[in-house]
Length: 188
Image 1 (cartoon, rainbow, N blue to C red):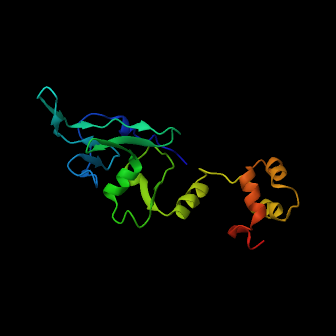
Image 2: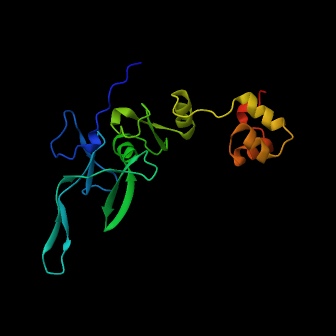
Image 3: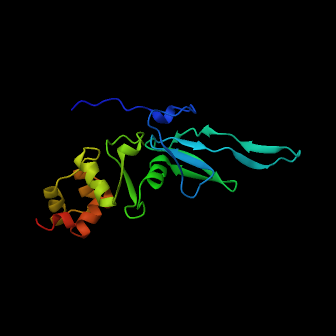
């Protein structure tokens, strides 16, 4: 499969619209910010407050610079409302802004698996189960053990600590496999 490079729209801080770019007000931040179908966020010009010296402070129209989360996987921005900052993930902003029924499926999936590609065409609403299934189906996440190994662990008499070392899995996962039979193993 030929992979094409993903345009880095998030790095574009020019006020010029990209071909086909559509801007919509971000819910709960109407009149303050807008998001585009290419995953960009802009602040709208507005009066901010009166300075102590009597001058007025205004916010100008500009594209908000995006930064990465501490884990480096997702892009985020700080949005301000009533002088209070709120850190928002870009993919969730785009989902809330462009998808109807956002609350029906609480997660946003990146179809191509690239977390920096927050274009509307690359995002879809999903449930937690659908998101996990997509991660395994697309190879983004790999199983550490097979279903038959999980069955062996469930029926094993070794302590969870030794099982964790033997199978190279976490202690909590080994403990949980020994304690109760997971749903995906019920046919074994």
